[in-house]
Image (cartoon, rainbow, N blue to C red; front, top):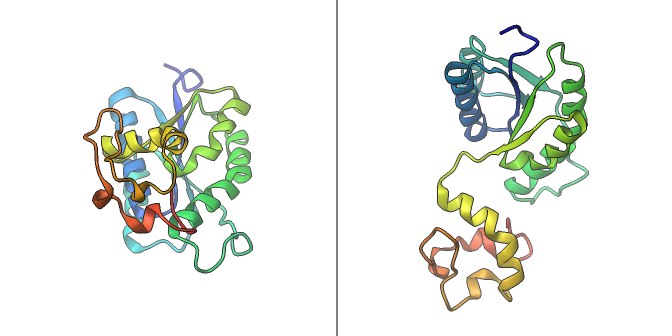
Length: 191
């Protein structure tokens, strides 16, 4: 298969080792199992030594591109949750990501983003390539995440205030003791 007809996945990783390592592993599996060329896009940061080593080890099989850092200081306050900061960073990186994709010598044939990169899914539409979301978590979290819009319509008030256990398709019902109060309530709720 010539390089022009070979599948090429562009994968956008959220910042942080917990996001980067699963994305690197996905990239390595695509290369090893499916012979797909892979370019992983990360955000430039003051990387830890472990992060640098993980990237260096992966570059023997795939390409890693660091996107320029984004300044979100004017968009979030100093007390914002880490999840909020990640979401804003991923939204703000979109123009640089699109530009990097457009300037690739070997254009991608598919786009893969992690859960925080969903705001970059329209990039796939702009480039006319299929797009996918990679959720490197357990099935319960995936079910909950995809069912949250339905819960928002069906459940009145805060989730943790519910007396009856919430029913998520494919999961056991769970009650308020199973919710992380910090994530699910109040004005700074993560979800």
